[in-house]
Image 1 (tube, helix red, strand yellow):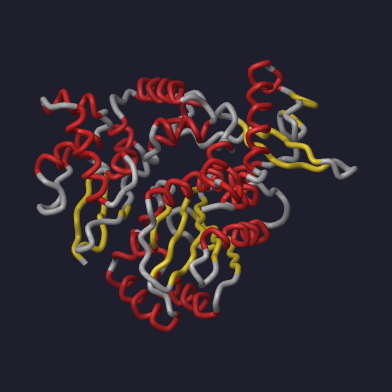
Image 2: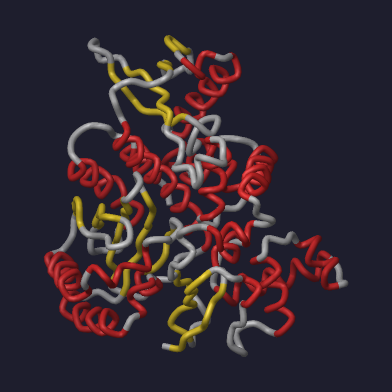
Length: 412
């Protein structure tokens, strides 16, 4: 999973058309993502995924024909399930619309001609109204590891920020810094001492991530390059007329769920939480501490009149989505038509009765300590049960259960 920083760098390119941008992303993602059939980068309208731009790198003719045939036969309405999807990295056979009989049948027919058995994809929302993904076809069935999923989710944060920035870019930012983190110019909120220090530290961390570390430890490099600085700024390379490189800090906060009720940073935290991000994920994406992320989310819930994260999922306009997760090998997918954790009732044989209760409480946002008190048992017992639940559901973290909501298991 090294060289993922290459994809992050490509995400913040502001030059050229969307096709040029996607072409850069596809090339940058190929070393880490390619399964032998190349990489496709796609930008479409959220919900329908109607195409806006498309690019590919090292893709075989069979894959191109397959994608064209799939798009023609699937129809735009088949993609409605993507509208409310949180960003994710999964195998293609886990995606929502592939569970539908017409699309699934076409997939099975088309892949025989193209030599494809599966594929992996990272999916995310970009600027308001847009979604995008990177896709790599594979000649074998794919089951991405939790480590791989988590690393690509970090990349997805940057993909989303990069496209959002491209849509809003007007040629100027709030601060200009050199590669050593020295501030050469600042305006507005970037003039404060705290902001300048945050930007300086973020630039230095970013430069470290772009150095030898990108090849030696891609995950550590991703950890260093913040999704946003101080919950507000993205960092973009710019060149002076003499060819010297500078870094521009550009305001680039995520869309506010309810700007009438929430301050910008509260809205950003709530937006990420509604997409299933944990407090740790929110902290990394916004470039703030976990305690600050928890405080922002608590304040957002209070202002929205909501009591818990689970209510935020149900209140979120995207809550009617369909999401698929890997499941027991005997099952094709874990299909989640809506987020109502208190009515979660998976079929017998996947989770035990006790595990189901614990998983439901986790989906309500309760910590292991709270669940232990609720169940009258030890925190260690709950931790062991949670580990088994994650393994059985094929998800990598507690945040994935929080993304789940109300699942129904459907046999293949």
